[in-house]
Image (cartoon, rainbow, N blue to C red; front, side):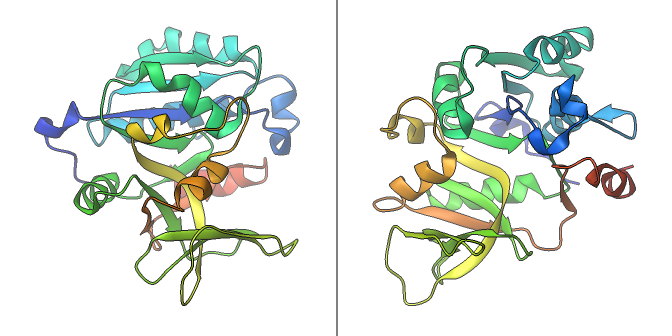
Amino acid sequence: MSTINQSSNKDVSAMIFAAGLGTRFKPWTDKHPKALAVINGKSLLQRNIEYLQQYGIRDVVVNVHHFAEQVKNAVEKNDGWGSQIIFSDETEELLETGGGLKKALPHFKTPTIVVINSDILTDLDLEKMIETHRRSGALATLAVSDRATSRYFLFDENNILCGWRNTSTGEEKISRAAKKFIPKAFSGIHVIETRLVNLVEREGKFSMVDVYLDLAKKHEILAYDHTGSRFIDVGKPGAVAKAETMFP
């Protein structure tokens, strides 16, 4: 696996979303944050911090809410597993992904941010994704793949975000017109230009999905298709056994 060259390291930092209640991951989350669920001896949080390190990214913001002290203690006990970790504290109110990113803005010192959900494990080549993002000049690039889910982002034939669809409810939100909408499943990994956060007009608690649909009307939000990469959303306890076979 390749790494980002040293000259570009200073231009990229990261955020790991670790604040969620993890209701699908009960009973573990009755007493622990999901980010500390263990896969083959390493927590999801540690695995994602080490995943970012493979690409030279060691400045990481982690948002916390549910059992926040457990997350902080784990990071401090292990010296951030070799990374510089800053906490964005949402103890008073869980702000969801969009609100959480907006609250964390003062902590980012780089023009580009990699954002990842703590319950995602993948071997997606992050270097290639970042390079693709930089070449495109897009405001954000979203990791997607061809897999079955109930909610999809909709892109045009140039991989530009146009909308969103929930196939279970039939709900659809369209931000820009296209001759053909191509559905792709979002993988919970984003490469974002920090200036995007200053364009967000929403306040309080809101999702990054809504942010992207807002901004897609006037800005290019692109897809990065990583179909074929190892990927698992460790959203439910039943996924742990599968994750342990995929990520030894």
